[in-house]
Image: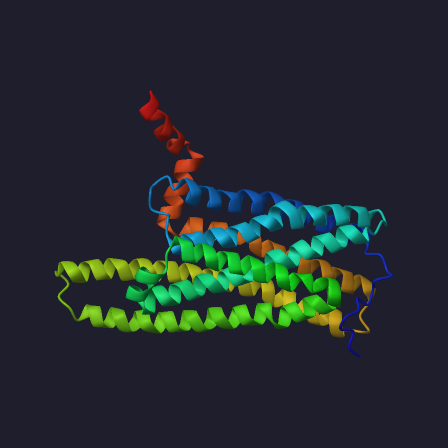
Length: 308
């Protein structure tokens, strides 16, 4: 029996311990996602080491902005909703607001991931075209389109309802993002392998060859970082999609189990907004240096030094 469009336990209150547990998880997500993603946006904006202003990093900022919304809006709304639910109070306007911001930020995050993957694909396979065509203005326009699509699609939430919308979301936005990431990553790795083999046959002492080798190593590092982001995306979104299918098709499941699945699905997707800043911090040296400069106030001291 299909339950698409209906939440099977809408008239059954979640266990108190589950509501408070979900509120606690949302609190942790609020703190870490807000601080981590704000720091990513800050270091690119301040650019303390003068090496972060690039189209790729602007798209990283767009991803961090989507994840920051989770930390500043979605997760705090989740704290409030589940806290009230723990006392047996179901605040439907609060729940609706929480899920609208949830879907807007999730869609923007998924589209930003796709844009980052396509950016790497074009940068590596068509470098001359990439350098001549992609600039900060075009990157801004891409980011703007991401938010217009995300907000526009999420408006349909009010038309089809929550349960049906998240089922559509799992089968469209999540699936499309997965295939875009898989396609671009496989193409990039095949291209890089061919390039490395060709350059290995050149004279290693050639200055041009050394420059190309350094460039390809950097591109490989960024691409591997994006692959890690893909794996983390799968780790969070694949179980989340399974949870959505359980809610929509498990007509005979006990309501306690359904409520657990509901909250796990929500927490998993929000958790994905926590991990991305740490991936860039651990993998990319320029981000690590910028984080260190900001956190140790070296950048502030450099700004103050000329005025002394």
